[in-house]
Image (cartoon, rainbow, N blue to C red):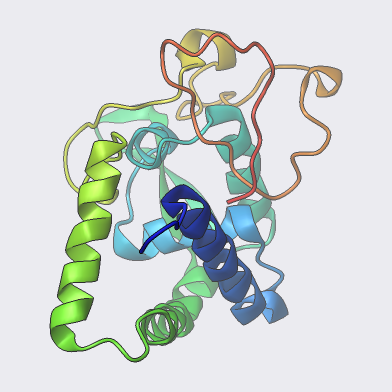
Length: 203
């Protein structure tokens, strides 16, 4: 498309999609940060917070707070890893499982809206182009795929503790956290990013 700024168009589309998802789950009080975790667990349960950070390139501290909120609301629970009793894995509760059909219906509805008027060939080409663009930007091909992936949080376990073990999460006092980060999850910085300011972009 002549003159189009692709990054801007992708950003606008992403914001619009996020707003539709939040609106679709509004009656359950699920915000922008929460739905990403629920979507991930609907695809694959029994993962640790570190797994989610690495596969979705999220900030560990922000993710720990989102998981804590979902626990408080009764949608997510932590269970001991059978191979390491100190390590916790994330699962949907019965209340979380009850949302699965609604989440799957919402995702299918948004997919149809996103590609309305596309032919099947155009849908396939669109999906392939998005996948290629993600790979160009270093995003894992499938966020829910098996095996460890590059692109984990640049903050690392030593700064924020191990969120998968008892007492893990973000040990920083409240005054050192970004007070504007209430719902979104931060995207982890690359290892060569030198800006010291915290990034908490709602996704």
